[in-house]
Amino acid sequence: MPNYLWLGLYAPRPPPHTSSLCLTYDLEPDTYGTIFNILGAPPTCACAMQRSVALRNPVTGESTFASRVLLGVISDSVLHVLADYIREVCALLNDAHGRAHLEDWTLLLIRSFEDSRFVPTGTLVRAQQALR
Image 1: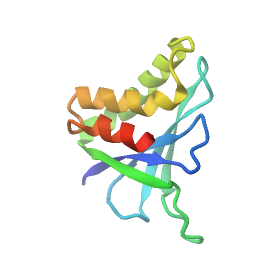
Image 2: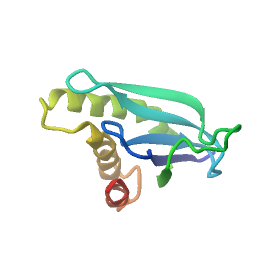
Image 3: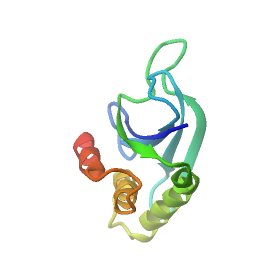
């Protein structure tokens, strides 16, 4: 079963959480997914994971995200280390002493995944464009 990794964009994108990472097992808009966020602010931010989140409210039909950008299909081995990577990004933000913005956490993770060839080349550029 494929593991689809998405960049979820919120509307109206209030700081400090402009985006989240989302993992789904299919491409349907009304699927369920696991959402990864960073809570709090450096130097005390922490990672959070919500499992089995409906990406479209079954009652109202409203989407959790204003839009989603498919970052790539990740393997099961990458899936198993995803939470570890997010914790590392959180630790980097906490250690940055104000030099990193909380909004950058998804880009830090995507850059790491692209460098490790977990997602296709060009994924970081697409994510940066989506966040503008």
